[in-house]
Length: 284
Image (cartoon, rainbow, N blue to C red):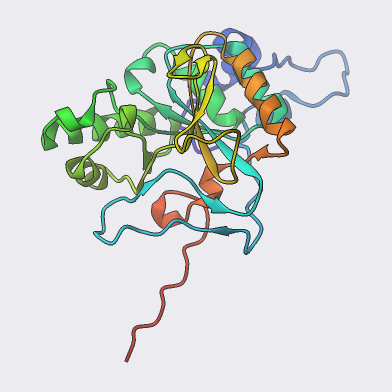
């Protein structure tokens, strides 16, 4: 476990089922019970998930930006029928959603607006171990293009500090609120340790109304229909998220796709887990 949560807090979390029942209750063995020990049950509760890597040759890794700043990525080039589920903000705390992510073993990526972490750190800690990386979505969700360079650095760097302190890993991927950014945003992101900006190619307007698609509608940025291989799908933490998540999982399955972990399709130099491509030799 990479997190820095004290042992006592970890045990209490497992025994009591923090975050409104998002974790299974763990009880000490008694009376000669031959079941798993508390230690092994707690290990199962908080163990990090590991997701399958893409098949060699099935995808093309995103490339670094020519200007040396974090590149902007909005889809992954792949032959696999996979989509990547990403969820923004974090102001709703649906206990059933954590259970669903954990039991269905669905990879997601959370982009946290860190003002929403106050008082709810355990909820996202549970999600982290259910299978979600915690990445950066600023402190307060501003339109970054309206801010000067120093204010942009503050929004990104201080959000990264909060996430690192809470969840034991510094974010390396940034999603600008509203998808709005400029050159100063990319420079500020680089200064804060961010390696790439991840946007999206499709949005599920879960719990709200989208332009031209109605309530709980789905829209592609290219105006098409359905999913395409390598889609990065935007969702939000809203009331009723567990049911909405079941809905999109059904759509994904019906169209012959599966969710995959976007971090496994990003090279390490861009904040992911995949090996970086070898540097080509210089021409003599």
